[in-house]
Length: 566
Image (cartoon, rainbow, N blue to C red; front, side):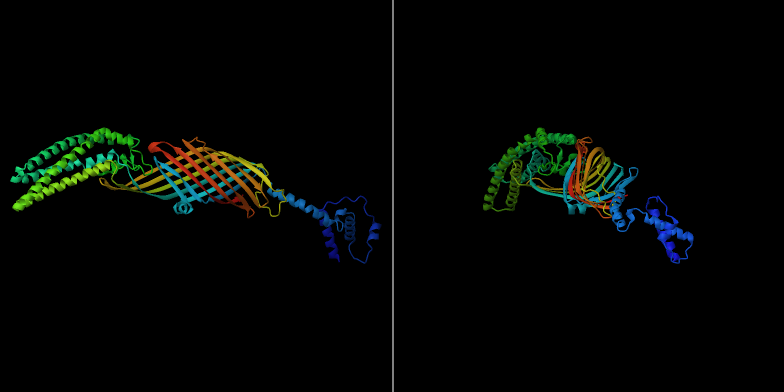
């Protein structure tokens, strides 16, 4: 009993210390104590008994809030207010303390396309997600935000290393230029072949001069006359060709400064560096590849070639053809004369003579056919097939680094996930303007292999050429943007973020922008997931000619991230 009384008095003492009680105005008298508590033979010490009576009197005088039935009712009405106040303390940020957010993220590009230019060489690329993943070497991206009250600092970094192979294959019919004819005359020239033909005919006519019947019919004399005419015409044309070749060589030496000097994306300086043998150089020179991507028009170059006198040389082809035809007819007469003689007396000398004359006729027929081919080639009447396959490996490294400041307008959303419902009035809205600088770093490397196969009645060429174009550019530009948010409840929020940078300040063309929208979902005390969609585009160009640099890129796709709050 003594233990029970002491325990009860202790509990009452604690209760009185926990809850504020009103002062007792009139202390209870000793008689009143005796009236209220009649002794039942308890052996308690008087001092303890007095305390017991005193605490009992305190309970008696306690306000109504602690009376039976009303205590629970009143305390229950206070709990939501206390709970809301406690939750408000959790989500209301101390303006003197820093709050940090670390957000690693990834964008899954559904489509990626654009152009890349390095050292004046431009290639297009268009990749789906599978191609991007195949060519992806490395990527990393994250966003860090530091807030103190309503002021914030933002850093956003994105880096990607991408390599891809772009295959271009094309078959085309090309239009010949003055270069075609010049190439044929210089490397496979009619004049040179006719000179060889004349030498052969002279040897054969010496044999024919021993035949009396041919002398009598003056056939050998006629052939001699035709051969001399051919010699004169050919020698005259060869002198003209020497002059043309000298002028063409001058054009080649100065062609590096000629803006339309590219053939099949290979300029003449490239060909010199590849140490092509002269004949291959001349054959490639004849290619006017207008249908191949990035090929320059050669009309002005053709005009310069024509100004060298090549037209004058070409004009002699009909005359050579006429003289060759007359010589062939004369040789044919000789063959017919020998055949008639063999009917009278078939000797070995006549057989050998007939053979020599027939060989001479065949040579003349072959040359006449080649001249006709040249004529058709010049007049674009013969088929000319051009097969070009280009294997281009484009690799680029892109870094985008944002440094910005921000300010928070509106209600401040949760920086932690409350353990219990916060009781806040949702939805709440907020806006964060963003201003800062964007650092871009892009490195482009283009490795290109071009395989050329040209077939025609005159020009046949098979060659492979390799080129490498690499260039890096780093620039800093202003950036502005903003983020708009709507918190639906303690766990879920919606947001829209966008920015733009460049504004033409760091290059001939300089503009980039981002648009992202999505939702936040809290999954833990300090962790939230983001699911959204992103659109991104950049258009930048700088420099010109062989120093031109440019990069265009557009991609869009799902945006995934996790934000950790500290």
